[in-house]
Length: 288
Image (cartoon, rainbow, N blue to C red; front, side, top):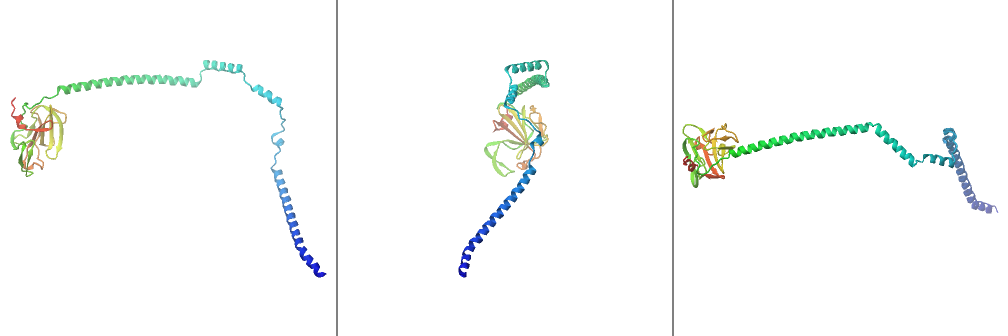
């Protein structure tokens, strides 16, 4: 009988212990929840605001009163027309600073437009004067147009001996280069005077330093004719666009370049027609 009792207790004891555990958990949870609610209520009481104390005790208006206020806010057509007439009268009698400023801007604009007209008029006068000067210069250039042809007589650029002749159809020996070649000009060694003269009236078209012919002056005689003077000294007597007369000194003979050094001091003289070489001696033989 004793063994059966203990066996019964062993079977039921598990459930008893489980029940006690459940009751313990429920009790603990209830206690914690109540404790937390108590703390939360205290926090709410501390943070609560009494609206009457904070803002005063206000009575709420009824709906009828609110509608009355709304009716007072309505604007009639008469009110709008009356307000417009008042504004118009004020605008006519008392001008605002903005209107004064607008008028000032308009005045300045008119002054600027007048200045533009004056400047434009002056510019037109300047353009007219410039056009007049250009026309006069063009007329002057027409007057200075040169006439030159194969029958024109020219003078020798310098007195002396031809040390290398013109040759366009056969080869001649160049002792400086030590080879036979054509030669488009004549090289004249001065006898006494070393001043080089213009062979005819013309315009200085170019002054250049050429590797072969050294300091070189090119005269344009019109109608496609040009004369070329090389192996001159650096300080020539003319400048570009100068008009030179026949016999006028254009420079002095200088030292020859390495391409013709064995010829000694000389003037390189060439005549071209439309940039093609012409035998200078044919023109030199023409009679005035």
